[in-house]
Length: 346
Image (tube, rainbow, N blue to C red; front, side, top):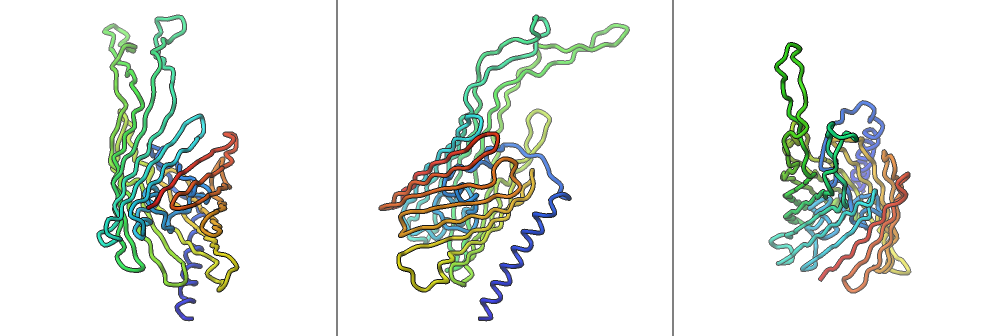
């Protein structure tokens, strides 16, 4: 009884700190970050639950949230493929695979891949010698990709750790930097050379993710922590920035543990995450996942401090090691965002 009271007290303190952070956003100092595609979630199960994955065990998908979440994987292999119909006709795709070669004795090894299809763009360049003031430079495409190698290990029956290193590449095409030419006359005027110098806007930094999970021993209550997108400062031309660093704290529990007998097998996971970002306000995320007979899952979530999205919904169907998940997120002026995920475990 004493242990239970201590754990519940700790939960209340954590939730109080989360709430305090939420209401202190007016005084926070925000910084600039780039490579924002790393912040976009494509996993349908996670999106249906408002991204509250920090304290859940979710196989290879954990590489996109908290690598420690794949440490307790019991299957030999877990594969996940997701597609995200994002705003402005942008498509995000992810792939992850985790291998458990010796039932956790040597840990779990993972691989993740994230890519973005932005579509085709029409390019122009300033040219004051023309009547329009510009010339067409033809069509071009942008590209963003991230590939990672991860590892997770269960240190004991309660504590797990995990990490991932990712090679990230973003290519924003080429641009022309005008050259400033000084005119040697009495006025000392300067003019712009519109031909200038062609610059390739491509960067390939490394990003580091790591996290932990702790099973409290009180029923299924789990705490999780993760840090994602840690990197050194990079820059395009002269503007320096870092990747979208985020620190997450999360708790989760199957509230059906409070009921001794149920007429059918079912679970209801309640998850709460607090996320602190480098470049925008903190968020409190609440997710629910109701599963019936390990076949049908109904999900819902809410995310605070989001300009266009707040609530999200999802559904999942599992059978014989295969799972299909779907998530729907109303997105304000951008209409809706739909995500689909296929999982396979063996």
